[in-house]
Image 1 (cartoon, rainbow, N blue to C red):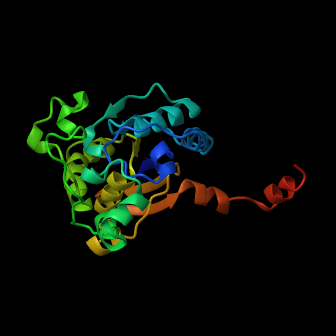
Image 2 (image 1 turned 90 degrees about the horizontal axis):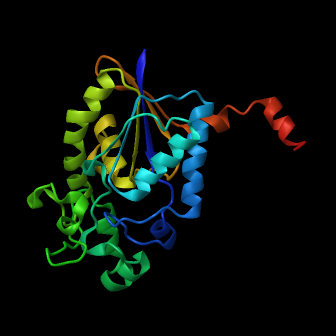
Image 3 (image 1 turned 90 degrees about the vertical axis):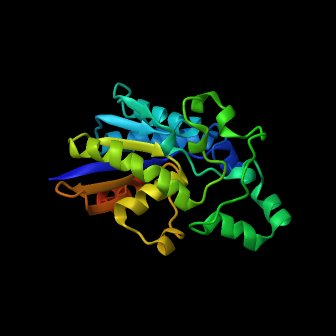
Length: 249
């Protein structure tokens, strides 16, 4: 018997669509993103996934993705815990910038380093910047020195991993079936931690929007027994007769 953990990256946001650095900026889902969230909820329901508790960040695109997915799966009754530790990587002074404009301003190599290097931070915000997180009400109870003003993936990992140890891991070990709706980089950090991926290899890992990532974890030590994207598994499980029937639709 293994524990099941489901991770979902939020559906496409408006700024994903516009190819902008988003980070902690609170941007809504695009029409495509809403549909992705509803579709993944249906897929989870049809494939027998049930959950006892859900976790998400405090950013609308992750919260809304979770809500749409749970509505489609008819599981809106489960408890939902929102926590800033699951927020996206904070992109500092890059937040709100078009990625093409950033390349023109700083150069392609520098932008690539900021995006992909494991331990290099983007330009940092000042406390006088309107994007400074301490001025956002949702973070008013958090000490200012704990709030990031620009993070590398390493910083994101250092923020996410204690939350795994203190909250997520004990919940899984207690037998709770968990779904987590978060972001590309906070999920990359979680995956790195769960799978013990090296600093070098994690740079190349991409987690697509709106596709449930399923883990089966060994009960004794939460080592990964199986890992797959639900969408890929469904494609592989199309039977011969499914293919024949599709010809007559």
